[in-house]
Image 1 (cartoon, rainbow, N blue to C red):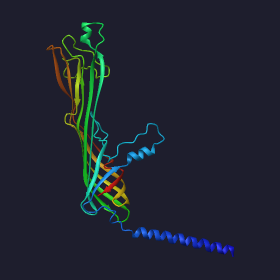
Image 2 (image 1 turned 135 degrees about the vertical axis):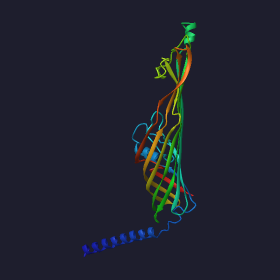
Image 3 (image 1 turned 60 degrees about the vertical axis):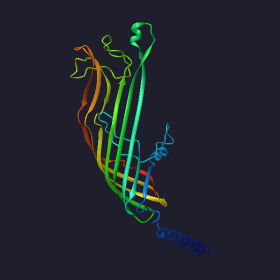
Image 4 (image 1 turned 30 degrees about the horizontal axis):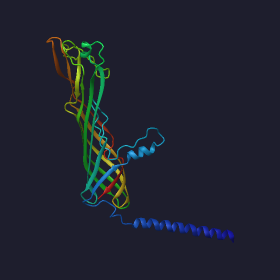
Length: 309
């Protein structure tokens, strides 16, 4: 009898658990998520959580750092002579044309400017006083400005807390400015045609076609027409609505792009041994550089949180 009672008790508990689980599932199925989902006229603003996941995934590593939050912009690893078209962070969002169809956009930029200074002996002061300890400054400056934009459409599928999100569009990135410039404390003169420069500055060299200036040093180098990046992308992902108008998202993107850099220039200075004068000149260091890429890449964010309002 005791054994039979135990069996009956276990069966009763199991039926209760199954009944409760079935009730919970029916309740979830019956829940109306209409007010949770994006609706026609809603704006969406998204922030990538990839920096947070990278941070949490490497807590045991020394030197861990938390990157800036934001959407992850389009990126390109090819640099040619200059910088990659790779903004660090971007603004991602969309506008719902209907309850299902949205227009998606992503705008990113990256500006960086650095200046390094190096001391060298003041040769003019040394000429006047061999014991002089005076110094002059050589400077190396680097400036970079990258922009990226993408625009397309996305379509939401699903009536429950998880929706599928499918989309595609166009991307464009441009290296608006990529320039390195140099100034020197010791000037080029007839008496000092190859003045002293810091070991950390570019060295003197003979430029092909300008052999009459045997010792030339650069003043600036730059991609005179920029570096451009054009492509199309497709995206597949999901959004899990954890609260009304708030969703955690994940997606995978496939991109086909073409990147090109029309030319790269350098401006030099030196002493012309034919005219016996100081001279500046420009040299086109590279012609057109270009290439195609077809790969999965990050347009928007692989992991993100969205707010609809």
